[in-house]
Each structure stands twice: as C-alpha cells, then as structure tokens.
Length: 135
Image (cartoon, helix red, strand yellow):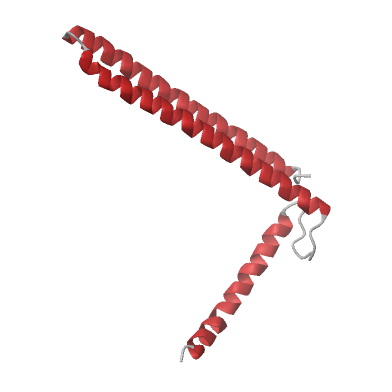
C-alpha cells in the first residue's frame, strides 16, 4: 500500500539529492588541499580535518569561558541591586544606584569588547586556515 508512495517519493527526490551532492563536491573542491572524489582519506586531508577540529574546539572553549564570565558578572550585579534596599537615606540610595549603574555599564562595555575581540580573532584564524589551505 505504501510502496508506490515511497517509490514515487524516491523518484522525485533522487535528482535533487544528486544535485546537492554535485554542488557539495564542487564547493569542497574549491578548498585548497581537499579532494572530494578520493575514496580513502589521505594524510593532507587528515591534517586539514585535524586543524579545523582544533580550531572549532578552541573557539567553543573560548566562548564557554566568556559566557561563564558574563553570567557571573550579571549575578554579581543582581546581588548588588538587592543590597540597594539597605540604604539608610535617599542620598545614600542615590549614590549606591549611580555606583551600580556605572558598574553595570562598565561590565557591558567590557563584555562587548571581549566579544568583538574574540570575533576578530576567530575571523583572523579562519581566514588564515582557508587561505593557507590549513596545511
């Protein structure tokens, strides 16, 4: 009962799948040091794969560390915000609020600078890997 439906679906999707495979092979052939039509992995291909894996591992590790610092800074700021209620008079509340506000914006500035610096480092490393063929 379902066999004709699956056969029909297979007949319809086969050309699209073949086109995607051809496109993938064309894109991969543009990368230096890559030969998509080879059956067995060669030493240069394994080196490229290892360098890309190292690159991604390093990138994810750096992003995790950055996120941990951002969350910790956010928690510290929230904790300080709860201490604002301990102010004895309006002048002390105003001074503590301004101090917290300045700290929050300084944390945000540092956070954005870190993200920008990390992005520049990742883009530079990625460009280096692509232009030198990662070999």
